[in-house]
Amino acid sequence: MDNSRTPLPNKLPAKRFNAQARGPLHGVRVVDLSRLVAGNMLTLQLADFGADVMKVEPSSGDSLRAFQSGGVETFWKVYARNKRSICLDFHHARAIEILKELAKSADVLVESFRPGVLEDMGLGPEVLHAINPSLVIVRISGWGQTGPYRRRPGFGTLVEGYSGFAAINGFADREPVLPPFFLGDMAAGLYGANATMVALWNDRLNGGGGQVIDLSLFEPLISLLGPQAASYQITGNVKARTGSRSSTTAPRNTYRTADGEWVCVSTSTATMCARLFHTIGRDDVLKDPRYATVAARLEHVEEVDAIVGEFVGRHTLAENLRIFEEADVTVGPVYDASHLMVDPYVVQRESLVQLPDDDIGMMPMHNIVPRLSSTPGQFRRPAPMKGEHSAECLIELLGQDRFEQLIADGAVYQHPAPQTQRAPQAACAAPIEQ
Image 1 (spheres, rainbow, N blue to C red):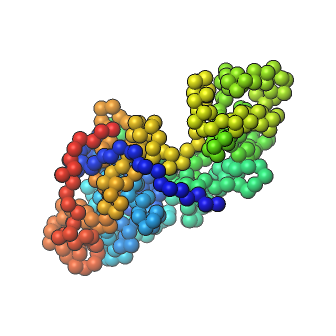
Image 2 (tube, rainbow, N blue to C red):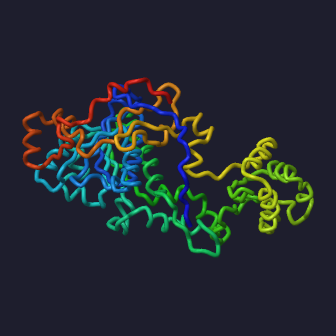
Image 3 (tube, rainbow, N blue to C red):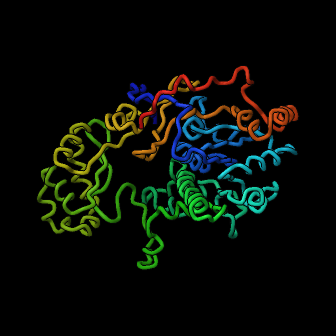
């Protein structure tokens, strides 16, 4: 199927980076050794609110850079915004020395090596805490630092299958369906950011000192899937794959409109269900014993969907939305990115914005989430080039002579060369609106 289409106009509000901006986490220093999605999602939450996140990349760069669209590092540009980049040769004899210096003045260190690798590098928690007793060490892995699977590779796909997510996702007569995005990694990143702030609070407010956060990809995801274990224990039944339908209410599905678009419908309360059938001119439905209760409608869900689908299919998307909105019925559009770029709600709410970009001029991306009334997050800097801030970060710690020697020895990589380095953002120092 050809899903290509002529790009729609972009109505997203333009923002600018303000290098002088400070967020509520100003002064928190984070050394991020992680790769790919979970760690970058975690440290983005801290960076967006002012933490100084120093991405320590290998000479090949963070693997997230390889996730591109049309040759552009789109994932990197979105999830590495507000961060700085140091580039090291991790195999060089002096790399560990540099990492120890970084850890000495850091508040947080994030890593996503397979369990045991940090210890093999000579940077285990006992070593790091001897250097910096207050350091919060976040250890991201697929299966956790303990247990029989601790040494196994742990990409999110395996976790999305193992957790039970894929088993309940999709349709009953089809194969289990994995999510089409990095669900396990993203969930772990959000959990990890929360845990990091808890640990920092415990150190700063309670004097608890540093600690290790054991963050698997598996456990955050299993926590999001509802009380499946409890339900199975009570009933002996596992949750079935039901597509877009619900196992607790009906109608709940997606329905195609007359112009080939889609709407989604939710009737989670008896009042909303009655209002929907009244709006489509079918007050008789709830008087029929086959549809009068939730249990009855679930038993006859095919017929229920046919009734709703017939009405929706006779009207365009715009007509459906107008009819149901006027009746205060919970029906909404099924949108993709092409819709979102021009949608009045998204534009006015500034859920998506666009920021200056060296490759495409302006880069669309999600706004800072959530919105704090007094201390909002800030767009301070674009995602860095590999090693863009090696000098800026390391000269402060090591001194000019020592830094230049590390460059000469090949332990540190600096890109671009100083004479072509990206210009400061001071010219873009307009106040940022949240």
